[in-house]
Length: 211
Picture 1: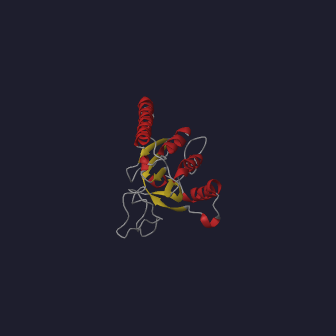
Picture 2: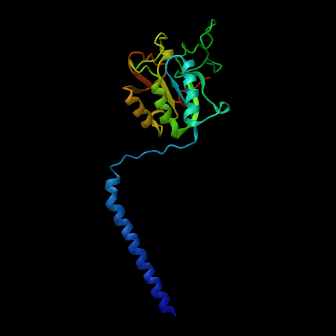
Picture 3: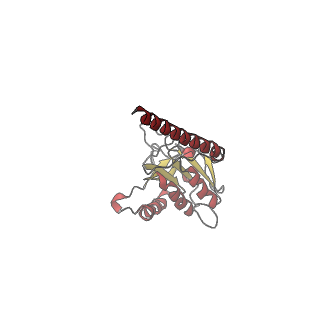
């Protein structure tokens, strides 16, 4: 009775070996082809906080509230767009960043921040929200729609987890390119972008949002 079992084992081993070698050869054959394609990090559907700035934050907040409704089908109770500041290197000693005030307490402009709107969205939707963002610029001039506001407080900026290393950054880059805009790594306390068709990109971990 041992002969059939031995034969069966040998046959299974041979078939397994042929299958393995076939897979190996196939993999070896396509490996050079696959190596020509860049690795693409997969975006997740986990909620991430991103922020956008282009001029005064009040009208931008309204636009992104509408974007949340349109792109994510969110109800009023689910909206997350809120105004604040980002892109500066510091807060005051108490961790505050405030609007302009008579006592100059933690003035966001003096601290180097810009006006932004932050929202919590699925990471896979970052590209769609970037397309929305670039549609808010003046279609004729490519500048912000409220050019009367001048200074670094009103510069154009985007904040992403990981900044330019975010999995969806290529989508943001594509959205900018379609509008003839240039993206540049933000260093903090950056100057105004008016007249330059430029948008700074920040890592939200290094440059957090202050509501």
